[in-house]
Length: 113
Image 1 (tube, rainbow, N blue to C red):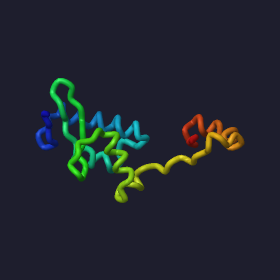
Image 2 (image 1 turned 90 degrees about the vertical axis):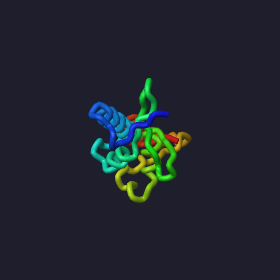
Image 3 (image 1 turned 60 degrees about the horizontal axis):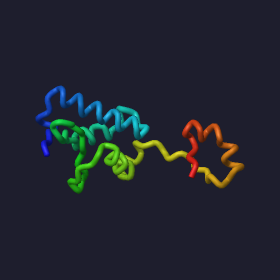
Image 4 (image 1 turned 45 degrees about the vertical axis):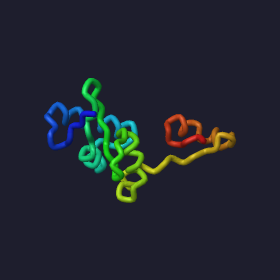
């Protein structure tokens, strides 16, 4: 497996990693300038040659997808305040609450479980 370390990245590789991290942060609902961007960038490797992908190494030296590493960092005490709080939850069996929160649920402000 070919890996490209942070120190040896050319400008094209740097842009590729930056864009991949931006996409992962957006999927997680995080602003692009969150402090974990630097953590992800520092831990990231470009893996593969024909189809390059970005992976990050965690503290246990496991190679993870960006989304998985963001989820890990969301549980880390140092970064937990960086993440938005989970939305309030409504039980799908509670029709009254579901009706009251229908619009908020459609906007993603209330989770249905």
